Amino acid sequence: MGPVLTLDDLDFTSHSEGQTRRLGERLGALLQPGDVICLQGPLGSGKTRFVQGIARGLRVAGIISSPSYTIVNEYRAPNGIVLYHIDFYRLDESSFPGFDPEQCIGGAGVAVIEWPERGARFIPPENLWLKFRHVDESKRGILMSAHGERYRELLRAFRRSAFGI
Ligand SMILES: Nc1ncnc2c1ncn2[C@@H]1O[C@H](COP(=O)(O)OP(=O)(O)OP(=O)(O)O)[C@@H](O)[C@H]1O
Ligand SMILES: [Mg+2]
Image 1: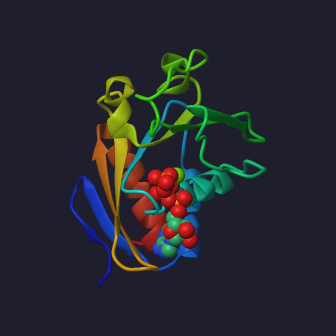
Image 2: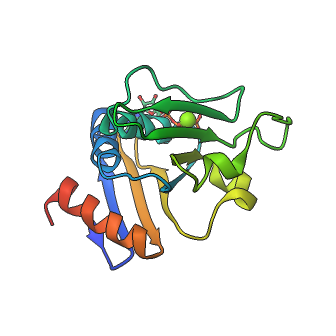
């Protein structure tokens, strides 16, 4: 089945790790400073693979891995856009004195956030929210929901870029 869409939602299946990266790359190429992208889903559902694609779409060089022992990793694209890769998985277990949510989320850079539900207090109401789910060993369902006009526009642009519809 192809992607299912409504005005504010887009639901599709990624059939491989590589496809998840390529879809992330399509989204990454469309991102602008201030954008907030939330990636919710269980362990191993493909969130970091998708972030690796986003980084590629932004032309960020280097290896993107989960910021497991910090909250945020920061990367700079050649055009000057800063990518904040945030992971709230351990937010409640430790304190992270260097972490400045105001700077990283909805500020001058792009914020991409794993486990956003654990840091809900830091997430602005307008965002693009992705829910990842396991379908089988190599397939992942991804539901994208736009909250706010910027993200409806972004979702439409992503849909055109990724699926041609
Ligand atoms: N269609 C797919 N898309 C993405 N990853 C897939 C897919 N099929 C299998 N995989 C595998 O699933 C795993 C996804 O790992 P990834 O680190 O992206 O998960 P995650 O959601 O970030 O987990 P965590 O919550 O631990 O950070 C990888 O081992 C990858 O090879
Ligand atoms: Mg991860």
